[in-house]
Amino acid sequence: MDKLLLSAIIGLVAGIIDITPMIIQKLPKYSTVAAFVYFFFISVIIVNIDLPHISWWLEGGLISFALMIPILIHVGHTDKRPLPIITANTIIIGTLIGIAGHFLT
Figure: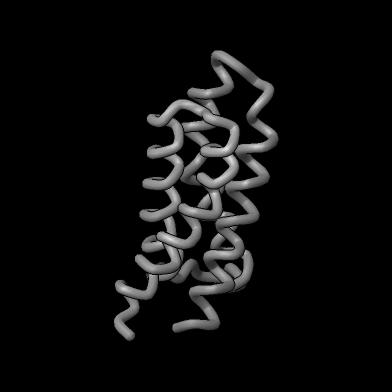
């Protein structure tokens, strides 16, 4: 299977995993769509990048967290309560994307 297609499939799954609790909690639609799009595209980046001197299992969480920092700053400006949840979800799902990409490619 093509690596780009596989990373897109992983992104769909990761996006669905992340937005399911958001839908259940009836969070705003724009937040839910933004989270889905973030994890869809971050999976393409994680699966197709190789950082030098970084272990394969660490890349996903690190890249995901690094690219989430601007969003954390934006969200934290108005409300600091969701920051730990967003950060944990980002690191965990990013790590799972990296693991899936490593073993499926």
